[in-house]
Length: 212
Image (cartoon, rainbow, N blue to C red; front, side, top):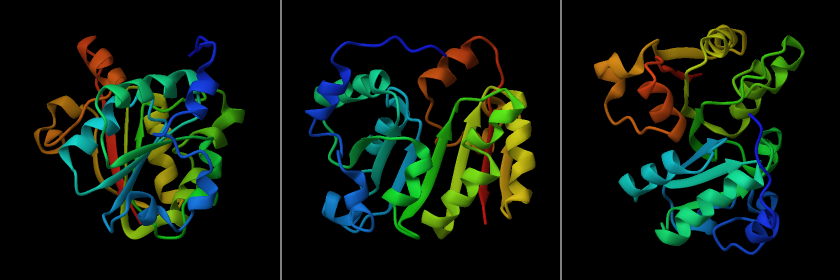
């Protein structure tokens, strides 16, 4: 997906109090960032923030960190926060490869991956957020009883992701090939912008929940 550059977006982000500008300095100290002992959950590739901000509204006793590498997209999430500030969520602009430098071992309670870039070429498989390489990174910062939730409308990516789970030493707790017709897995479902768009087009949404 080609993202249109927005002039001044990086400067706007740099001035925002909703963004953690030196996230590596907070490694092991995220409870201090939020000022409480609540669980910490993160979304990698949060887009414009609809999903994670809705979760933050619904779960005030949980802390959330939204991670997005594209300034143009993160800018939209910041603007939403300016319109409706939430005390239990902050944003980071960074590449997901740096996750182990930002979160300490067992510091994260849950990880959300929603409509990730499929990186369709085989040579780019290691860049997919659901690859065994990334699962190894998540293994370092996720609590022993923590889980990963992944949603997509891309069947090829989903099939790849399912194949990576056992190869990485994880196991599947729940899986569906049509989320919106799965009564059990739809309970408490929060839609992303992409999910609303694609499901309205009649595309099935795939989801898994995995743990170690």
